[in-house]
Amino acid sequence: MISETKLKDAERIVRITMILILLTAGTSKFFSQGGFYDYYSQVFQGDLRINLPSYLVNCFLALIPYIEITLGLALFSNQYKHYTVYVWFGFMLSLLFGHYILQEWSAVNQILDYIFLGLLCMIMPAHSSWFKRDT
Image (cartoon, rainbow, N blue to C red; front, side, top):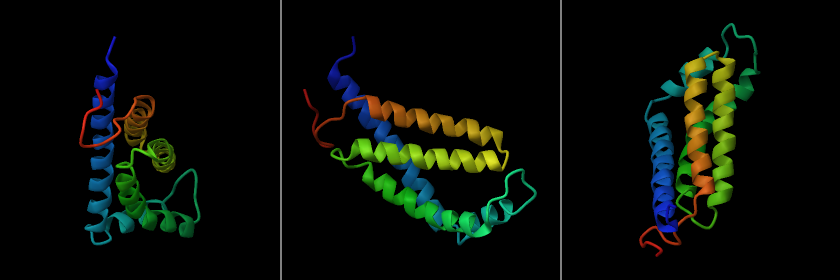
C-alpha cells in the first residue's frame, strides 16, 4: 500500500504541474500581442456546425488569460483546493466544448488528460503546507 506521505507528495507534483500549465498558458496569451484572441475569434466565425454569437465567443476569449492566471494562482491555496479543482474542471470542459465546436478532435482528446490531472489532484490528500512534509 502507498503511504499517505507519498500520496501527498504526488498530489503536490500534480498541482504544481497544473499551476505551471495555467500560468504558462495565461502568460503566453498576454504576450501574444492579441494573436491568440484574433486567431480564435476569426476561427469561431468560420463555417462550423455550431455557430455561437461572436460577442459570446469574443468575451470568453478575452477572459481566458485572466481565468488561467487566476486559477493558476488559486491552486496554490491548500484551503480552497477542492473548490479550485472544480473550477479547473469547468474551465477544461469549456475548452473541450470549444475545440469540439471547431472539430479539432486531437485537441478534444488532449484536454481529457488535463481533466485526469484534476481528478488526481481531487482524490489525493494534500500536505498542510507547501514548504514542509507531513509525516
